Length: 158
View 1 (cartoon, rainbow, N blue to C red):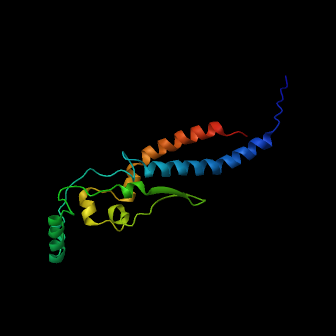
View 2: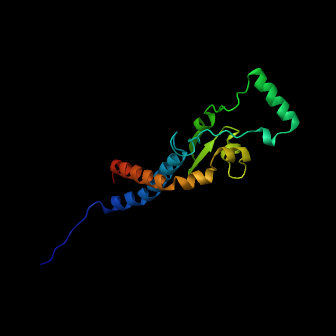
View 3: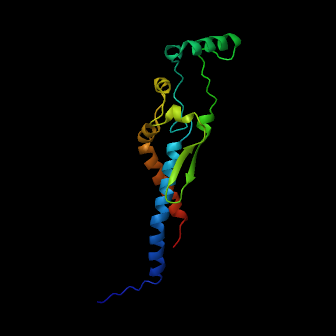
């Protein structure tokens, strides 16, 4: 017995699979970047719980005079977080063509979470560096990318 199968449109399938590789990679990278940026519960947008670390121990006499004058004027409240959430809200992703980039336009963010520029005060308060945040969120980012790819693949047709 001789059985033959004739497949029509195989060239369309091959073209679809070739295109799918690059698009799927780009889609997965986007999903990973979204997850690393995160939200209030995880990722770069997640703030550490408030921890009071006194500034006074590392201040010059002039800075200390300014601080106590600001406390007296009511501009500074000791022991209270002065966070306004601007740094968390400023995280966004940019499509650079070949890759996705997580970026933040707030100038002081580099002192909070910068890999080479994090201040000792921010580290003492519990802020994680960008690289550490990415490492800590890798497993979740991979799970998120797989889920996004599955949903995306359902919408693709050869």
